[in-house]
Each structure stands twice: as structure tokens, then as C-alpha cells.
Amino acid sequence: MAQPFYKRILLKLSGEALAGDQGFGINPTVIQEIARDISSAYETGTEIAIVIGGGNIFRGIAASASGMDRASSDYMGMLATCINALALQDALEKVGVFTRVLSAIEMAEIAEPYIRRRAIRHLEKKRVAIFAAGTGNPYFTTDTAAALRAMEIGADVIMKATKVDGVYDKDPMKHQDAVKFDTLSYIDVLNRRLDVMDSTAISLCMDNHLPILCFNMKTPGNIAKVVTGAKIGTIIK
Image (cartoon, rainbow, N blue to C red; front, top):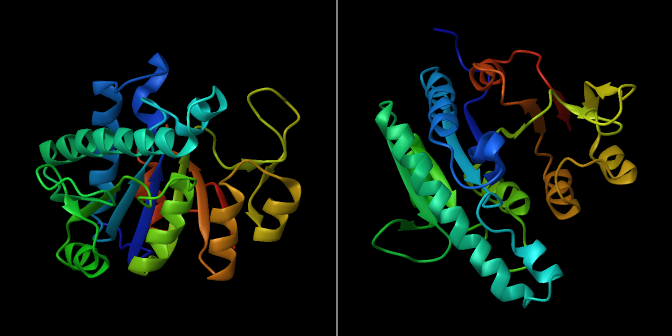
């Protein structure tokens, strides 16, 4: 078994990743594949925390653009992340990975409240910690929640799972001449307005020297590869 390059990681998954090609909801086949990939990384011995989005169910910022109160719509989006967290927990435990869901919004019957020291203790006991409900505050994205939680638990890196194999100067799905970057600085990402994470999350990582690794999660085995130090994707540092 390959040795982990990182002792502790935070994996950022979008809600859309769970939907697969259907575009909304939770695709059972896709979530099972994601669980198997996370299990392979877990078996290397690295400590894994996960922040998951809710865009496959409800996007607060999209609803507010349609006239809904922003705070109310963001809280609804947080609840969507809790649904995804429970679905991912179920899929992971079916492949033998011990997990705990910790929510920034208290809901005692389904998840533990997020407490920093408790989260770290779960990781030390080799449980995968799934952080739900973002930061618990409206106006903050799950990207920002990922940056915040990664710093709180002392993660070595944020691993941003995407649909493409890194960060490009423009959308590679639309432009055949798009150029992929192997390494970027935080300032480059902000100045170029590259679609990696929102500016608040990038700034938090920059201020606290937390690297961000963007990679393609649709390739089976990639999570385990990046955990063991394979040169995949784009590193922002």
C-alpha cells in the first residue's frame, strides 16, 4: 500500500458531483463510485475530512437572484448540503469506511454539532468527518466553508474535486485552445478571475498559506493518487 503524501486533507465536493449526468438529485451509481474512490484514499492511512455542497438540490445564490431573500435561500442551501452529507455517509459506510457527519446547524437526531476539537478527534480515530451546512451563516459559500474548516482542523491541503483535470485559462469544455496550468499563485487566480473557488475562499487560503489542489474526480482512483503525491491536476500555493 502506497504511503500518504499528506497526513490530513480536506476534500471539497460539489453537490453537482453527486447528480452525475442527470443534473439534479443524487445518482446512486455516482455516489457509490465516489465512495469507493474515497475508500481507496482512506486505506492509505491519510486522515480525510469532506465539505460537500448542495447545488444538486438547491442553490441559495440562484434562488436569491430570482427574488428570494438571500439569507433564507442560503439556509435552504445549507439544508441541501445536509441531505448530501447523509447520502455520502451511507455510501461510505457501505464500503466499510467509518464516518461522522458534523453540521454547522444543530440537528441532533441526524448529525453531531460541529465542534472543532471533536472533529479533530474523529480524524485522529481514523473516521472520515463530513462537514455539512457550510459555515452555518448565510452569504458564505461551501468553498469558503471548506477553506475555514481546513484551517480549523490543520489540514495540509484542500483537494478541490472538479470535472476537468486542473485549472485552465478558459473553459476547456468550450475552447479547444484552453491552456492548463500545473502551478498557480493565489494572486494569479484572483487577478485572472479563474473559476477555482470564490474570492473569499482563495483569500483565506492565501492569508494562511493553505495549498489548493484541483483535480479531476471523474477519473477512477484519482483521489488516492493525489493523496499519495502523484502529480495530477493544478496546485495553487
